[in-house]
Image (cartoon, rainbow, N blue to C red; front, side, top):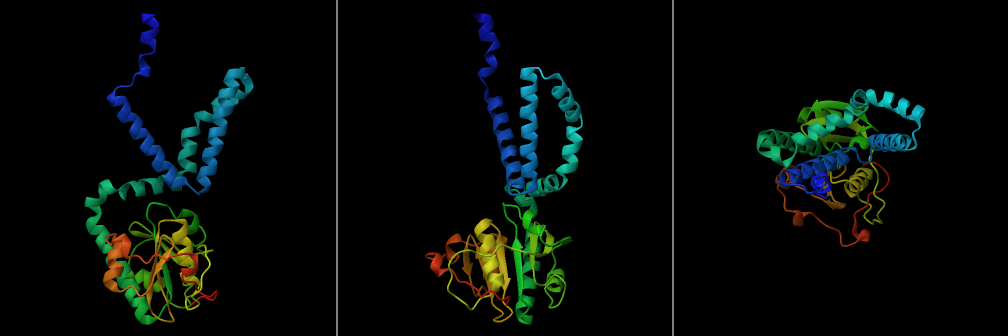
Amino acid sequence: MNRIWEQLRFLRPGWTDLIEILIVAFLLYRVLLVIQRTRAMQIVLGVVLLAFTYGLARLLDLILVRTLLEAAFQYGAIAILVVFQPELRAALARLGQSRMMRPFQQLQGSKVTDEIVEATERLARARHGAIIAIEQEVGLGEYAETGSIVEAPVSAEMLVTIFTPYSPLHDGAVLISGDRIHSAGAILPLTQSPVKDRSLGTRHRAALGLSEETDAIVLVVSEETSQVAVAIAGSLERGVNSERLRAIVSGTHPAKEVAVPSGPADVTSPALTTP
């Protein structure tokens, strides 16, 4: 009996085991956040299926199947590095953007905010339409694939150049991840909510659509009114001034100040022609 009890001691975890479990659970959660709604999730499901097949082959003593899978698994680590290279880069970048690293990012984040606000002001003064999505916790990788990958540091000059009329990428959205312009000319989903206001354009509807599906902060500059609008969590705030815009982009704005529609019918809607 004592021997059996000794063999079952691993079922009584200590405090160090609990810490390890929490760390592993947190890492798995972060990995799932990075790969959600991407093709990598399909690959993960395929790997799980192969692992299940291998376990079944061992259980049923299917020697040929087991041998083939073992040979494939020998190169699994290298294959994962190659296949998941974009997701691994995104995960490391996301780690650098975590709250634990925030004290070290304050200066850099302030510079990025200044560049975005300056670009928005210049675009508004020139009446150049623009839509800029700032990535938060939920990745925007799948939307970036619909545009052109830029991977350039965030700067007011670059943003103004992208949205200059008749430039190749001015009609789409710019996606910003951290301190870099990840993609330009991206196509965003339009909101499906019933809307009434016909004074806005497709950019505003796309901003609402993306903010409904992700936690991104989406900035819109109207070329007709030169007003700046911000979409967050499916709500649109119009007539945003520079101070308010800086507070929103830097993450210091109170959530209660964001205009929240009372119902689907109150969401401002653009016409289907790009402003």
